Amino acid sequence: MNLVESIASAIARLDIDEVQRQYFFQDEAVIIDSFIPEAELAPIVGKLDGLRSMMHRSRVPGIKKSSSVNRHVLDRAIPAVREMYQSPALVNFLNGLTDRKLQFCPQADPHTCTLYCYLDEGDYFAGHYDTNYYRGTRFTVLLGLVNDTQSKLVAELYKKDDSRENRVVEIALKPGTLVVFNCHRLYHWVTPLGKEEERIVLAMEYVTDPRRSRFQQLVSNIKDAVIYFGFKETFNPR
Ligand SMILES: [Fe+2]
Image (cartoon, rainbow, N blue to C red; front, side):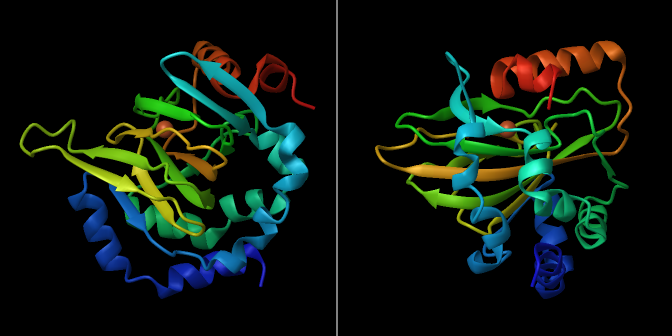
């Protein structure tokens, strides 16, 4: 079974109405444990060791310390990621879940599909909303790949909803766990990695309107260069 077939099967097993109920109850965020069986992630996980030298490490004091792999590298090294990102079954599921018509990010956006790699002791990401430089609303889809750690993704629900009390949720992004959220609504962070631990997550981005001005694209690229991928890979991908 290839990854596109695995995704279609995983979606077919879901109680879509219940997943959507949770998604909106949690202010446009949902966690689906064991979405894909770990063994079916082999088309991606089996290639991670070959990518070690391509993981760009960056440290921005007070913001983050970790490594990342951008979409241009993934397109070449693990085509299964792009096939999954673009698979009609996944897009249809996300359209129904979010009640939006989602579109792909432009080819030039290095953040379209990204590996977030927490590899060294103390790697972390401080609290933030995922920034958006598009005209439309942006959605993030996270898929756990490696989770040999006690480090967690922590989400603070309802931070933008004054009518509800905030709720903090700790999420272990185990292999095959899927998280979907509206970037503008979910405040989140990643707790520090312990010694000899490892945590690798695939992030996929969709937008309701992929248009952006040259200025927005420039700001987005500068942010990606500094925080994630380095200037060379962001502005002059191979
Ligand atoms: Fe984030």
